[in-house]
Amino acid sequence: MPTPPRLPLVIHEDDHLLVVNKPAGLNTHSPSPFSGEGVYDWLRYREPRWSNLAIIHRLDKETSGVLVFGKTPIANRTLTQQFTEGSIRKKYLLMTDRPVHLGQFTVKSALVRTGEKYVSRPEHAGAVRAITHFRVRMEREGLTVVNAEPATGRTHQIRVHAAERGFPILGDALYGGTPAARLCLHAEELTLKHPATGAETTFRTPADFPRDPASPQLRQSALARIPLREGLIDPELTNAYRVVHGASDGWPGWYVDRLGQFLLSQSAQPLTREQQEFLGKLLAHIATQQATPTTPSGAYHKLLTRTTRHATATESSPHHVLGETAPDRFHVHENGAQFELSFCEGYSVGLFLDQRDNRRRFLTNHVAANFPVFLNGPAGAEVLNTFAYTCGFSVCAAIAGARTTSIDLSKKYLEWGKRNFTANQRNPAEHEFIYGDTFDWLRRLAKKGRQFDVSVLDPPTFSRSKEHGSFQVERDYSKLVMASLPLLRSGGVLLASTNSATWEAEEFLATVKAAAHPSRRKIVQQHYVPQPPDFPISRLEPAYLKTVWLRLE
Image (cartoon, rainbow, N blue to C red; front, side):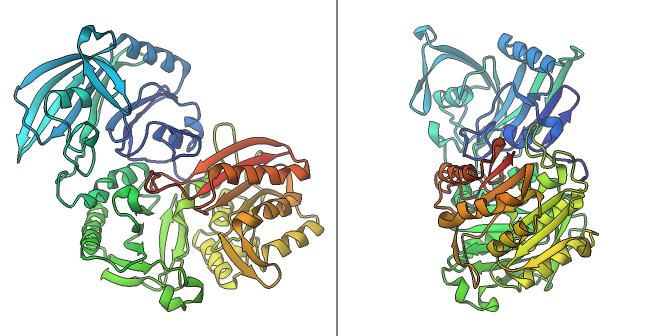
């Protein structure tokens, strides 16, 4: 089992409450079944002790700050009553670049929804009444910081009332605010009566607004998104994650990963001067987070092309652009596990970061509430990992205590996988590594009567082998599922995943479930997982990774 998480976003936890500092850019909960997880979903599916979390109140997606979840029925009941009665005191902090003419005042109105916005109407208009108390805290360099205390809890009420009084919040374009790196609204403080003791308790977290939120270089907004990543990741257990995810972070077509002390930049074009400057700022930020700030670090850039299969390893490998050069092989840590990476081996560096949360599910034996990976625990369980690449899923299953069988069409990647086992003090000789075509070996293993507790199906969108010919994920995934099911024990788990951006989540899930019907295997548990929060989903940057965990009898 991994070390218990020390997630930076957690402010307080006891038997009844979990209090977090919700990062800006993350919903309170998922808006739809196939969209990105909100902080509630991500927490609930992360730890068994958080499986029964209950939403008591909400914050807008772009609002950061104190958010309380109930963990027990008594907490849920008493907190809901306190919010309903209005006895909970909430204090927000906002920043604006417009003048605020009074030092202290109150706004009262009725709020009416018009499309995606809310507007104020006179109190007697018959709509929902909203009251907000404002007080100027400080002014500096053309910016004013204002305390806002809502006496009611209406959607968007602080944003509407601030705009109505002529000082829309910086970054709140919906209500006429100046575009900025983020919406500068933060839930700073929450005071309630503890559900168990009745004692008045205050939870507080300071605002982390960017230093130059209204900078003309608005695409530098990715720097403002760093708190989202760093709030969700235990820095002692994980130092590999995505920092810039294309248009979702204000940089269409550009992607940047942190890989330990190094950055990997990816785009279809050479780096612009602006992008290079951003990488330099990001390296400086990473250096300040290290125990030894002088630790060498550097950045690499990889050109994304459609002709990668015909390029040499040198041509398709990332090229050094900034700072220190990386050794041929180096390690990163993810959820406490160690993985070897390299910038010298061609298109991929050795680890797909978007599967981090799914790999963690093997470590914790927790898919979702009441859905363990291994019904009887991982000790002695058998895991089949097809298209294993460098065996990331296998490593995590082995750390948990399972025995693994990894199949891949590349001897080089299987050897790489063995080194990953060794890096985690697991003996590769105690596990099975099979070189060859996955379909061919699924047939062979079925003939031998092999049975597994978990089968992992995470194929590339396209591959080719001598035995099977070409594999195209949307065309052939159902065949892959059907070929794997004879090897899955009753009560076993199928982990099915694809990174095909053009395949709709509903269609993928329907394909996987339909492929199970001919085998007459009954699906008794199901949990769909989108890509993790450091790969944020937006209209401009739609989801591409889809994963479903299925238990079949």
